[in-house]
Image 1 (cartoon, helix red, strand yellow):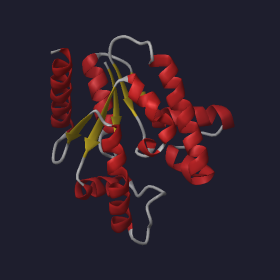
Image 2 (spheres, rainbow, N blue to C red):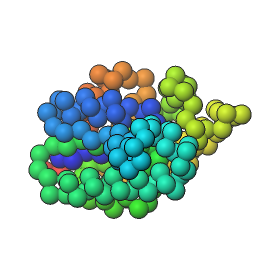
Image 3 (cartoon, rainbow, N blue to C red):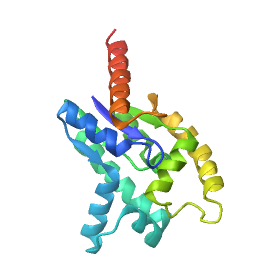
Length: 185
């Protein structure tokens, strides 16, 4: 089973993705990290995804993201066993990769309420795309804009409100097992 985790920044995609991959003893692919690596190889400059987005703009960022997702698709389209992928928070807005992600396997939307999500975002520092003059209002609008895209792509939605990473992993595993059993029945 190939599982792709989607959702807003700080919803737990990387944390739960790494934990799920460790539990399944399988590879974990972090699309943001892969974008950073690809950018570094092309430019010789090591930047974070935030810095790439800020310096090079949305169009260039989407181009890099599309290349990375395409590479993953080519690598995993005939793969067997378990694989876990975590994509960036904006990936669901990049319609060029919808079919590739859907073809790979199960897409799981890690849902967290806007209030809890904003608190997590604040702890990590505001992303460059959030308006510094009205961070809460702008974040709420982004959340409302993106949530339908996550729901549209997802085969499964797992709400993580109030859960620790360990409890979130247990809930995610339980939902994936139920989904797998239903598919086999």
